[in-house]
Length: 174
Image (cartoon, rainbow, N blue to C red):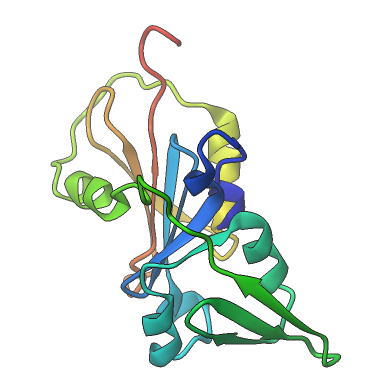
């Protein structure tokens, strides 16, 4: 997930993973990833509820991946490693603008009928980032929603609600 975040300090909210309704969201403004935490983590429903509406910086998210036990508190995540190492990771403030409306973007694309298209411009580095963000995916379905509309990627696992979106290059930049 952290690999799908922006590294642009001018858009600090995009440097974070956002948690909402049991999902984790990450975006750099061109790609958007949604992971179903019920399927890719061992967090309890209580911990998922405490995460709701919170943001964690991408660097801290990357660090917590190395810990065995995660305990979600109101203002932080406490982590315990196999060797007993402990660390706390504070949540980030959303600021005045908040996190982008990722669920609406995904919902709009899910409800867009598939369209035949002849060509589409893609940034291959963004494709590689998508592969890195979904380490557990080996194969996926690709849904084309039309010229200059997002390309949606879904898992072949029918129980997965994880989704990714990549915006195509506009025709002027191809």
